[in-house]
Image (cartoon, rainbow, N blue to C red; front, top):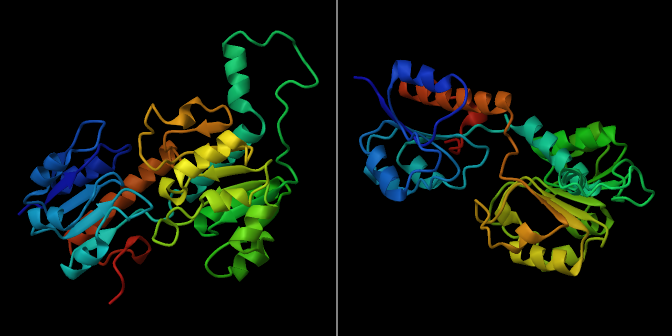
Length: 325
């Protein structure tokens, strides 16, 4: 009998074609996520689901698909999945781990440079015909990135990839983790700090922590108050790590110089958000991993996990979320 798979969004690359050669695939062809009603309807009778961060996979979804063998998430996070319930039912949960580390690190540095050197404002000035003097000593003065102090909150694979880039800019690298990363200290020259110490010293603070109970709204009014008024906050991790209301207030009051954000508490960012009208923030639509190579590789991994699970093969532990028994 051919296995049945529900895929909640179309994917780049050739992986879906490979999946279709082995399984019967039901695909949500819309650019938007399936509604809850559509999700519950289309997962019914399926052996596997390939989902996104925007799809809440909970007990109700699992009840709708009692034969479900694997939940494969096209993401580096898995907070949208009830992993404990899936594990209890014997359902594999996989993700694409840190395949996107290098692409996300690239984008992190793009945000750092855009914020520090007024890249967005400069582009707008040229396009709108407001560049009237060929060169001026004080035109769009920004802040130097080279030689600055760089604070990384969460020195995992993505944070380490960002640190490697920071070394090329001869930055002083500080980091904060729940525990010391002595290997990274030796390889990257990173110095451990308490969170408060990192915030107080850094010219740029970049968020790379995983989303969990401890990291939710880790950056809030109190945290922002500890930062330099000339410092920038960069977030390419998860929107919920930052208290967005507190950040907006800090940007308005110029408690900090600015922010570069690729993720938000609610996505897409509502047009009514004050962030949209602020000049001291650079906003991107959650494109941290959006290189063709990375997104295609993520699809390959997500599909391979499904095919391996459905054929009874051992799953690659690098992509398996369920705790080891």
